[in-house]
Length: 382
Image 1: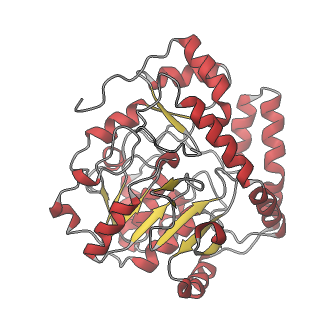
Image 2 (image 1 turned 120 degrees about the vertical axis):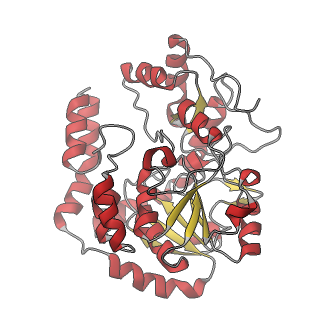
């Protein structure tokens, strides 16, 4: 990955731990960080655990990227850092954000969990920031691990020491659970035992949410804030759906990661083909003429009734994940985050975006067509 990005890369057990590591290194406690409100709630809790105040950014309703023009100068001037999301693999305007951060003298951190193969302005996502975090659970399909890429290679040693101080030791039980997980999932799903699959994932700590967002637990969250920066204080939120997020890897895990990474180019090609197919449908978001097709992790189709579309797909045992609704400023409230100065784009996108796995483009198109799924209609402001 270092060769791909032209940067020094450091393995981490999870993207969320890599993000915490980056935020603690580049951002002092009490700082304000601009981030996307259409994002996994775990990321909100990682930011809070790092002792930072989240500031929700205006978003483009087309693809959920940060709308830099809608951020007021008064807001820019109070920031300590910017965190991109590159939602579903659609790149945030990293070049413009890099220029703005340079003028302000603040760090740019790229969350590239969904964007391991995406490119913006001719450069890979993850090559613009002071740091970038990637997931090996998404395109790579390793269901574990990630890495932190840094612009300054001299920082690798100090960051490695900081990472090791956060790690829990490798455990045989965790390695065994990791090694059997793909086979257990394949067995219960192949037998069409959806409840059994759900139960198995919950027992492994890999599926805990009853709704799209986890319970906020505001009283406990206020107590945790008093201890920030502290990963331990926020552990019950940060670990959701990934209990081994800070466990040192064993040989089984590293071996599988290596095998999966060796097949990454083929996976990216398959994602790009499926993305192109989905972007040709009537539910596709507008795509600028001449824009390159990214190997999206999920393609956010814009449908009139997202919940009905999810239900139609579920009837055919197609599960839709990576839904981020409501936006984080609605979910967390002003007690825990600064609201977006222009929330309409994020609210519209979160309500209408249907994240589709491009590797299942064919079945999804057939199901949505048969169900008569409608398009989302005009974008806000049109």
